[in-house]
Image (cartoon, helix red, strand yellow):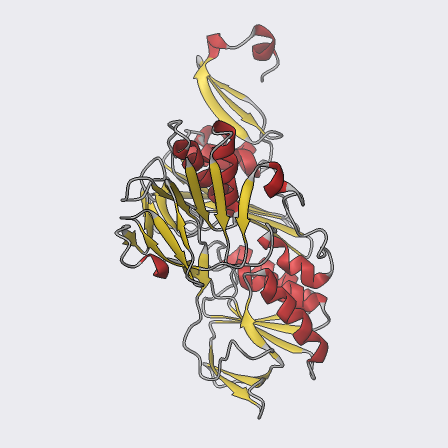
Length: 441
């Protein structure tokens, strides 16, 4: 059996690991358009800050591919997939045959139409890959005024800003929404986050967008013009608005695309023996009860594992996922889970706030469907499990809002909320050992 994996990503390598778990001898080929072995993409901002290096950014061992008998093909971009003849075609004309295929190509940075933006300039670019961080590192060294503009106040924009600030630049985040992390945070938590950024040398211009980038004779930025007409000096311009599924190369393949790659519960696409996962896949959103693209690392890993398991002949279903983000901004831990800004008036919101902590829970009837945790993220893992499983937990809202998350017994059923291990399970109370029951409150 020959397995081909497009993408040396979290999803792709989780898929490869799952295949090898159940198929010790099958041929596994991993194709990547980047020249690097597997690295931790979330750490590229830490690379700029010097918190990680060329030696520590990798998340797999040097001998990972050899040890697992994987054939790794770096620097090869797949330009098309011929599902009729079961082969993928690379940019250099190579044809790679497969028996089963996994597609984990990730996302492509979205660049809004902006006059003057030139990705070929050494002082402009995006921020999703290791090479992007290396480019900005070089740009910071020659920046005349030490001024950087980051377009986009989402996770990508915030981490790019932190990295650039770590190189000694003054940074301004330009965000179209009324607050940073606007899709995940509410007004209060957004203001707290912006304040922490401001205190550390990163300004925020919300409700704004860059309409034009003024250039020097070499084609590099000198300033930007905002929607309001305000002009800001800019040596460096980074666009971190977000990504879109990288699916253009699948045109004509017969694989169903609806914004991203449509998959079933086994992570198989509309074409037999072709699977997909990660930032380009459309999965079931357990909170919004519909297909959705949720581009986060934990889901990518889980999707890859499910796909690889099925590819190796062992049936497994993927239950779906939900939005979950975890980030730390200058010592301020932030976790957002599920539905954080409800639009349905029947949904109830409970908030705890003091000088250092903001915790918000969103309930739909008795079911917890979302949470925002700033400053104190106690129990975030277990709240995530409770939300994902749709457990009724309204009676424990006071404990949850205060971060007191332990174990609870409900009638003759048990629900275990383990703050240390990060899981929630349900079952028959009588099935549990007596010593376990005795230690619950």
